[in-house]
Amino acid sequence: TVERPLTGRKFCLTRRGYIGLAPLAARPGDMVYVLAGVRLPLILRQDERHDVSPYVRLVGCSYVHGLMDGKASTLD
Image: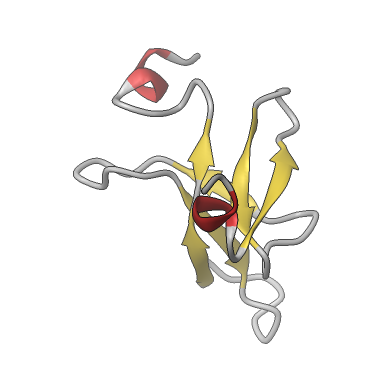
């Protein structure tokens, strides 16, 4: 059914206007990253215990229309 792939996901909209599906734990301010060698965009969150640090937490993987299958490598 259609519901099964959506289980544990919610719709999201990025600041650049991309739409997609993110983990239920995702929240405003989380970041979408496309890392080399990773098939799906990742949702990362600045570590709240470290205000000014490079530490991030992995929220989960996502589907973002237009950022799949290496298309993100062509973004400015």
